[in-house]
Length: 243
Image 1 (cartoon, rainbow, N blue to C red):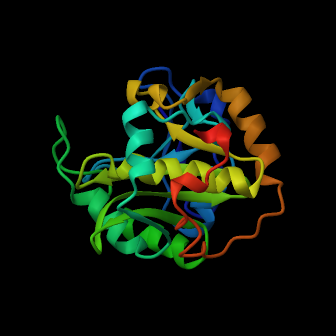
Image 2: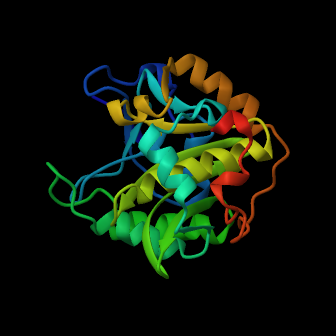
């Protein structure tokens, strides 16, 4: 059995009490209010549940993370980044990004965990300056992107989508560079995949991850909308270390 959250409190059980199977299931219930969501992320917890289920809260061990300085695009992606022909925008159309993440068909998946309730909750966080989108635009159309939550130097990735080849990878590459330029940072990728590993992501123990959250959340980086043109420069302007 897992604990059921008190509707009148933003407290969570200690992450160490999360189940091993399924990995990281911590508790259920509560709501998706901004206060509860921010309290969760600050503790290394995120919501993930299917339609018809109660809200489920997770803190897996280990945790997949990406140090922006360790991002390593493949040769084909580097070529695509250098070739250009796209524009990356920050927080330009957050609603379109989360809607696309919710509706994009995915191999081996039926339905979506990004329910209308989840979309509404993260749109509220976006309005408050905590949730952000990184968007790849090609030919004036939204071709791919990602969204997540930023607290201090932490970026908690939630989902990404691509309508054309490499569109979501382009967004991730520019997110890594944008965060690196702002200072010390870490991207939470939540679950381990071979795709993320190939781009430089690595597993981190839950205890180390939570310790890192404490450090990065304390950085004086105020919430607020990211500049729409913050990532519009071409990839060729990147530092040599990123090539």
